[in-house]
Length: 82
Image (cartoon, rainbow, N blue to C red; front, side, top):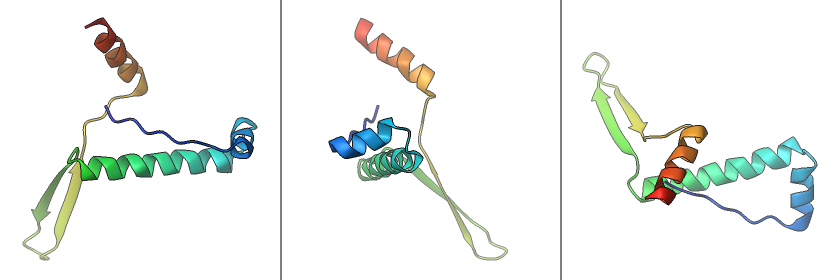
């Protein structure tokens, strides 16, 4: 599992808690970008490609194994039990 964290100033925390959608989106976006960079740097994603012989283009794909949040909670519980 990959975990991201950030620290907010008190002012930003108040905007976040008051429901400022722009502040909430900015925090989530920053955390997701940091997580993606970590996944790339630590080879936690797989890249594949397909060459199209008709137009000589190349299609590149990336994949990573993910689980919905309710399943992540189950995995956390399983790790605590073991």
